[in-house]
Amino acid sequence: MTVRRFVEITCTATALASIWIPPAAADTGSAQAPTTVVVSTTDDGAAADPFGSDCRTRSGECTLRAAVQFADAHPGTTIMLPAGHYRLTIPPNPVNINGPLVDPTAGDLDVTSDTTILGAGQDQTIVDGNHLDRVFVTAASVSLSGMTVTGGNAAEREIPLYDTSGGGIANTGKLALDHVTVTGNAADYGGGIFNVPVADMVATDSIVTGNAGGEAGGVRCDNTCTFTRTTISDNHVINPGRWYRPGGFAGRGGGLDIRGVGLVVLIDSAVTGNSATDGGGGINIAPAYLDTLPYQLTDAVNPGMGHLILRGTTISGNTSVLGGQNCKKVFGEITSTGGNTSNDASCDLTAAGDRVNP
Image (cartoon, rainbow, N blue to C red):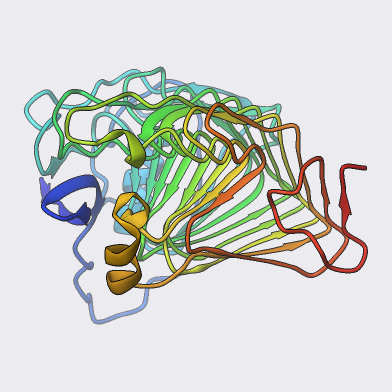
């Protein structure tokens, strides 16, 4: 068992979300050569010996879970994931489900060392959380390409401090997505993806669609995120009305919720058809969780503003019950470098080449 360390995001005394960050790996004193393993079955099963010289379960096959365990023990591993539907079937360990311990043999796939996972294509390689847990935790320099991530569930279990972020992917490291679709996932925070305050994420030629959350239906960015030729569409946020999270804290950012001080960039991308109950149907920008405090107090204690840069991006057709259809910002900043399109004026598009209400 590995003890989890948590990054807790709080407003006054209330902890609103927590994400596991693993302890640093011990220095072995010698560099390890990169290794490539090929997953040989779509079945789910733990490694017989994750520290061994190859990827095998007790049945002799190399499952995706066993490959991830192997990669965790062998930094720099590349996992080849052929076409197939890889459904996770081992529920989280009930002893740990509401506690600070992690069991890599069960529940989500915990990628804790520098790893590359190469699928056969978004419509060919499907990694399915089977609604048992989220799909991936990425806690190192991790690259995912050529796959669909679906069926993840990190929704509320009525334990306020339980880790309920990132239904598809919870990123606490440096995540790169290339030709990845994240769809059909759910979480309290970041239905598709949650990028914690110490993490960085880059998404290229990817799609985040059809995810649901209580905050951030598609992607939650609490630090640096860059999206290039990426579509964030048809994600939804519904304020769950939790007793420990007053109404203003939730229901925002149907497509993208920007809560940190890191720079978020959208280049030649699209944020369309998303919805929220409480604001920012497409994009919500707020300084951490201070947007719900009185103006005078917020102005005094604001640790920094979220900053969004847009270039050649379409933000259109998003909806919100309480306003801010495409964009809502509280002490946040939107900078347009031109060539953007929106069907309303909420995103402050005034640069050369921008089109509003085309």
